[in-house]
Image (tube, rainbow, N blue to C red; front, side, top):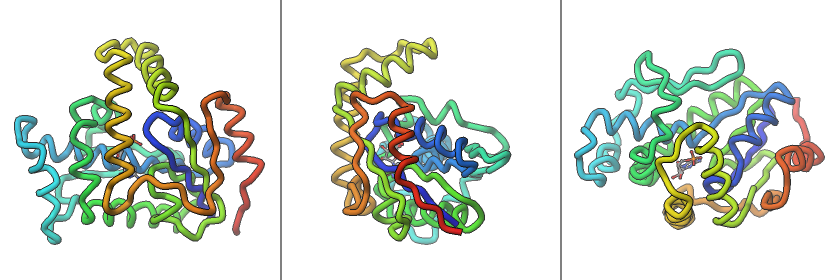
Length: 228
Ligand code: C5P
C-alpha cells in the first residue's frame, strides 16, 4: 500500500501534521516515536525508575530478548494507533520527561529498532500509512515516493512545545528547559549509529517555522502520489 514518510526533529510538528494528513486521506497515522516511548516506559516499569539508565539499553542487546515480552501492544482500531502495556493505554504516560530522558538507550538498540521497523512494515502491508519519525524515509520505507522532512529552528520548536504544554495545563518545564531538552535530543537523534535523524536525498524539505499547520498540510498534499 502507499506510505507517506514524514521525518523531522523533535517538535517539528510531524505528529500533528501526520495526524491531520492521515485523517484527510483515510490512512493510518503510525507514530513510531510513540512506539519507542512505549518500549521505554515498559522498561522503566520492569527495571524500576531508580535503575541506571544504561541498563535500559542493555536489556535489549541480547538478540533473544523480545520487546514483546514486556507486554507492549500497539493496537490499531478505527484507524487510530493506541499504545498499550498489557491492557492499559499508556498514551499519556509515555510523554513524561522521565520517559523522554531514557528513550535514547532504547532507540540506540538495533534490536529494538528492528522490532519497531518490522511492526511498521506490517502495518503498511495492511493499509495506507502516514508514518512519522526520524528514519521513515531513509531506513523503514526507502522505496516510497512520498517523503517529507519537516524542519524548524530549536527556538520555534521549543516555543511550540511550551505553548502546547501550557494549553494542557502543564507548567512543569520552563521554556529554557524545553529548549535545552530539544537541543540535546537533536544531538542524540542526529548522531545515532543506526536510524539517525537524516533527510533522505529524495525527501522534500519543508521549513515549518513560519507556516501554519494548514499551509504545511497543503504543501504535502500538493506532492503526494498514490499507489494502488
Ligand atoms: O517523535 P518523538 O519525539 O515522540 O520520538 C521520541 C524519541 O524516539 C526520539 O527522540 C528518538 O530518540 C526516538 N525515535 C527514533 N526513531 C524514530 C522515532 C523516534 O529513534 N523513527
